[in-house]
Length: 127
Image (cartoon, rainbow, N blue to C red):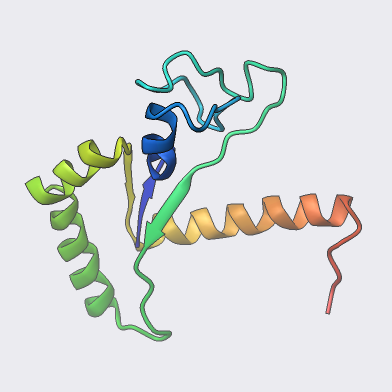
């Protein structure tokens, strides 16, 4: 299961607000709120780059269907909690909850994407 969020540059926001760091572009799919509201996306600048940050919980191999269902339900409920919603607001994150099946698809797509990039760069080696 994963709790996907778009990286909202919350880790450097205090530096930006203090004028100690100038952000040239963000790798978000669209412009975001202050203090980045005037900061263009990389895509707007002609570089089709959109990156996000995901957070996840990964269980051991060979979980039973019942165990997977339990965790899908428990984490799905947590994603609806006020504590999680407050964390989203506090960090300027966007939620994109994926259950275990959705996370598996995400991992497969990410692997294929990065394998292709690394292959094009001559850095991927088959075992």
